Length: 226
Image (cartoon, rainbow, N blue to C red; front, side, top):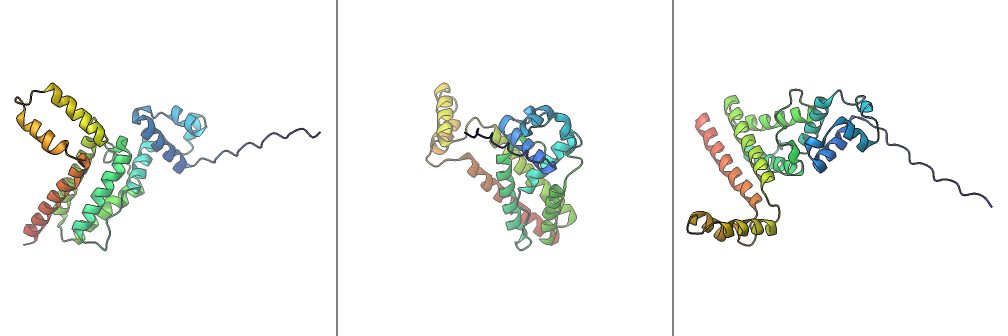
């Protein structure tokens, strides 16, 4: 009787910078950015931590790559669209990407060695605004206003103590039970007449505020070019 042969070991996937960065993004998403160490990342990809330095220079270089990976997920402004549509679509895409990677919110504009996806993104945004008739100064104002809103909303959304409609209702009901309605009448009214209504989703507030900013920028652009 022929002895059974041992199963052939699966070949180890060859590492490169992209795979190391992708694994770091996944680790930060699963366990938080604070859990990201070179030792832990090495365990995840199956190598000694020192082997990672064949692909990233150091922890800062790794973070640069991770931020660049998130920027690569954000849709670039379409050259075929008018500036307002392009900025709206870009903002919605950015918020979606940040909701997938909340660890990145505070890092997106912090890197001193931005990668190619980051630079392409910024260049496309400025180019869309300039193509839409914004002066250099007004383009800078518009970019700052939009990014402040996008990142601020993403941070606030990620910090909320609820995710689903059911969790929202539970949290609000608990707060109402602890707070006399006659002492906080306006908050009680907001909670009952708005937040606890069917279909409420805090995320829907994003596009309302975004449109206010875009409308304001449109008026400012018109005044600037008059």
